Length: 144
Image (cartoon, rainbow, N blue to C red):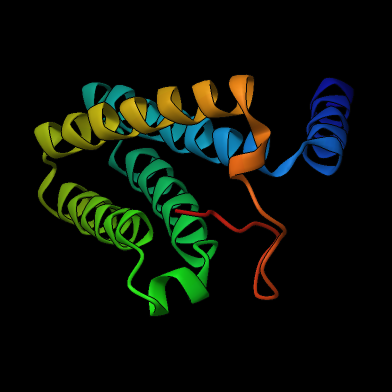
């Protein structure tokens, strides 16, 4: 029990001290962790835990969606619009996977999110200037 409390405290400190790019990477990593857990739960035939894991992954994807820079979306910024479409697609596929027990849909979104997290890790490692200040509606703004 104490270990869980310490782990949660450590994670809170990481989140509170991370730059915006690192927070985005952490969101992707969290979504990937829950999607992989959902696959493991499907193998164990534990549909309740699978459902819980997929809902957590969906929540993270929604957070990424809400964090997109609304000004860039409204102005038609291609990267922001593509990320918006991708997040909506990923969300819908995970809902489908949850309802239909579709492992392939989960694997497809894992592949997409793996590519995205690798790209963001490169951006964060090489140039943090691509990440702007937070938007008013969430703690992050993803620029495009």
